[in-house]
Amino acid sequence: MSDQICAVVLAAGEGQRLRPLTTYRPKALCPINNVPLLDRTLARLEALGLKGPDTVAVNACYLGDQIVAHVGDRAHLSVEPPPPVGPLGTTGGVVHLREWIAGRPALICNADAYLASELPPGPDVAGMLTDWDGTRVRLLVVPGAREGGFSGHRFAGMSLLPWRVIADLDPQAGELVHTAWRPAEARGELELVCYPGVYFDCGTPADYLAANLHASGGQSVIGPGAQVAGRVTRCVIWPGAVVGPQEDLVEVIRINDGVTVPASR
Image 1 (tube, rainbow, N blue to C red):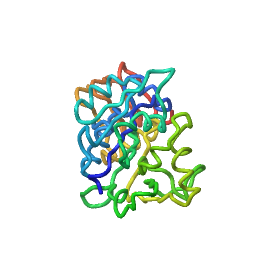
Image 2: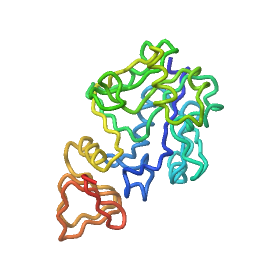
Image 3: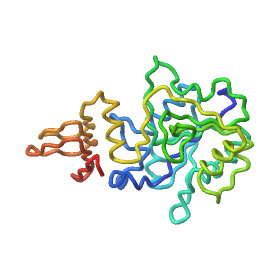
Image 4: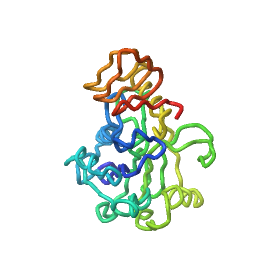
């Protein structure tokens, strides 16, 4: 089935809830245990057999030059118009790629999703493709009821859309939750695939720090080229950042230019 499917990685958003981190980098390039979120997503897709510009596309808008330079020739790039026109949202981002998708089903991935499998090594989201009938919309989910959830579950960063759904998307109609997922749910054509691991959407500093600490086993994450002369406890220190000898940082993110972001922000 994977040889008939393409993948779209959504990396165009401004990441407003993650500011000021996203003042310096697009959310997709914020590192988790020193690996950019986008690279984690591309590696997960490669484990499913989805690799290269004919099969994987990445969209970009906010700080898009960083995304373009980082992706290079590893994927097809869809650069959306700058604000105030773009970013185009999740529905618009997929529609912008409709010519490239060209009749295929598409595995849509949020670049800011941190997924850590508790299973043995292998394609940890393989359930998204297993025994799919090619007609239903699938969502990757984790347990946990919240407002706007799905049957006691919450979305975990991936959806699988048949071509017929993609072909009917209205680019002006908002996000995929309204244009694809809820309509499929109403038709009885939505399948939930439970993810057997840990998920953070990395949309806030608290979740971003939590994802880093999960990936590092609870230890502070020190980026390449960072200078740490003081004390850090359960922190993320970005590449090239500096912690002075008199500083005692606890559960914060130190980013460029000496900016310190508490997890509670």
